[in-house]
Length: 305
Image (cartoon, rainbow, N blue to C red; front, side, top):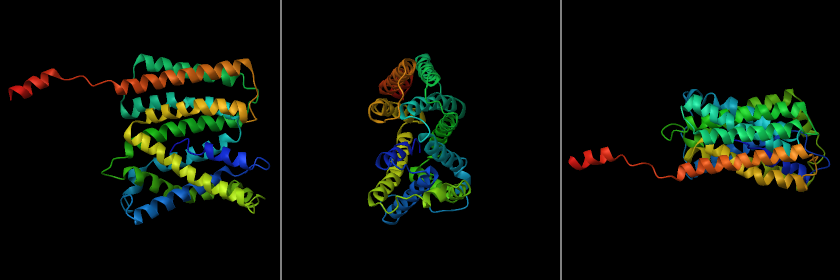
C-alpha cells in the first residue's frame, strides 16, 4: 500500500494545476482512503469480493498495519512535493535494503551474496546522487526516509497479515482505510492541511475536480496492485517491481519534469542506482524461475511404499 501509493497522484495534480499547485497532500490521502472504502464496500455488497464483517478481534489482527499505513501515506505525499522527481526516485531505493532487512528479521528469510551486493550498489548510487543534489531540501529528505521505513515495514507486515483464513487482501485494505481515515482527518485539521484544501482556489475548475477524483481512484488502484503483488509474491518482490517502474519515471522526470537540476555526480549516481536496481531485479526474478530441486530420497521412499 504501498506504497508508494500516492506519488503519481500528486504529480498528476501538479501537472494539471501547476499554477497554483494543490497544497494539501494529507487531504488527498483522505480522498484516497475514502475511495478505497467506497469501492471495496460496494463491491462486497454486490458480492464481487468477500472479506469478513467487522468484529472486535479485527483491530488486534491488523496491528500495527493501520499506523504504518497512515505513516506511509502522509510521508509519501509530503515528500513528493518537496523533492525533484528523479531525486525522489533515487532516495526511494532505500526501501529495498530496508525491506530485505525486515524480511530477514521478521519473516526469517535469507538472501544470497549476489543480491546483497546489488543492494549495496543501489545504496552507493543513491548516496552519490543525493550528495550532489543541487536542490537539497532537508525536510524533503527526512520525509522520504521516513516513507522508506514505513513502506518497508508496511510491505513486510502486510505479507504477514494477509492470511486468506483471516482478513485476506481485501479485508486488509478495507479495514486499514476505515481505521485510519478519522485520525488522518484530525491530523489534517490540526496541521492546517484541511484549511489549505478548502481555501484552494481551483475547486470551481471542473478539470481540477476531475483530476482530483482520478487521483483518489488511482490511489486505490495503486494500493490494491501493491497488496496483490505482495499477496502472490513477497514484500521484496513488490519493492523490486517498484524499482523497475522507477527506472522509466526517473528519466522521464529529467526530460519533462521541469525541476531537475543537472550535475555530473548526480547523473552518475542516478545511473549506478538504476543499474543496481535492475541487477537486483534480475537476480530476484531469475531465482524464482529456477525449478525447485527434487528430493530423490523421498521419491524412493514413496515408490517403496
